[in-house]
Amino acid sequence: MIDIHCHILPGLDDGSQHLTDSIAMARAAVEEGITKIVATPHHQNGTYDNQKDEIVDHTERLNKELDALHIPLTIIPGQEVRIHGELLQGIENDEILPIHGTSCLLIEFPSGHVPRYAEKMLFDLQLKGITPIIVHPERNREINENPDLLYTFVKKGALTQVTAASLTGQFGKKIRNFSLDLVEAQLTHFIASDAHNTTSRGFQLLNGINVLEKEFGSQAAYYYRENAELLISGQTVFAKEPSRIKKKKFLGIF
Image 1: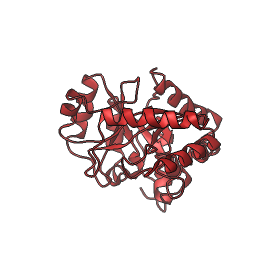
Image 2: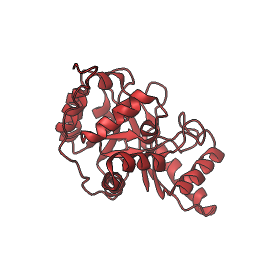
Image 3: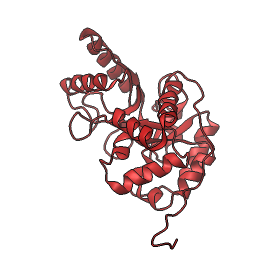
Image 4: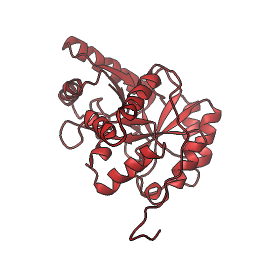
């Protein structure tokens, strides 16, 4: 399996704090059947400002450590970028890091809302040849309340990634159900761990894939595994025609 969103690089953000943490995470990933991880330190989220060159350097060093320990895992450099007004300038300044070897960039929204300029920013990124992947939209309060926002972004070319732990219920029943709604409506294209450690924020990627298989069948599980493979190899991912999420009935009333 390929994990396209993980905070495994040591000492850069709220993920792994030390090399020993990263090694423990690597071993846990291998136990789950993960062979490649995209390391995605936070950038411009108000606390962390990890830039391209630093991430590439830390990735190379961690790969050397894993190789020396004979841990069969490859780390690929990437970045989780909080959407902000100077994002395009950051690209011009070569501070922004799409997933290595691809034109896809992980984009994070604030947890409580979607900035008003988001639609234009996502469009402008695509004009520059960058495909935005909106990470964990199921955990965004405004999208949860108004999923048509996400439908618009996806319809206009953005991709999205749901967190495996959301599917397993770690973030609560409401987020779990909404994550399943996103899958059913073809509004998400990747499942990833967003792992930060081996305890409170572990991988759960295999468990998440198993939930998909149970709820939607083996083809759904295959779809998400295959899209991750296509992504890191620089190929076009499968993006099915999205649909709007219908409001659920309550006591027979919409």
